[in-house]
Length: 96
Image (tube, rainbow, N blue to C red; front, side, top):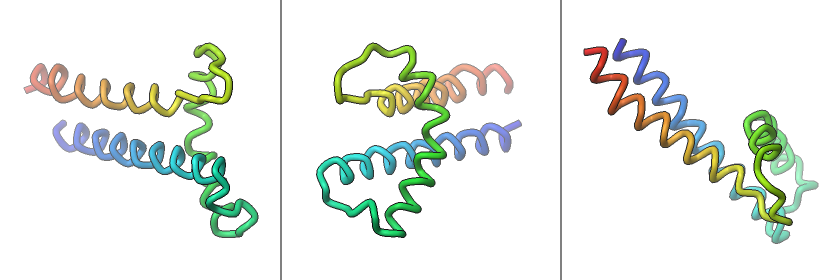
């Protein structure tokens, strides 16, 4: 059971970094620091978009419109933190 919990924790940790990378890349796009026509940048952007958009879309449907500010990555990061904390402080001690 410990191996399962560690694997879930690893996946959540990796997804945390994917969300952070996606947010940073969107800022770099917004401030014209990177060129979206560049093939490598475009491929990375499409990959990050395809990994994060299925999670962001339902959250964006629930959140109110804040103009140009997208706080769905923050909500996802808080949810991941909550799941990891719940997993290790509540579920894991009950299973031991």
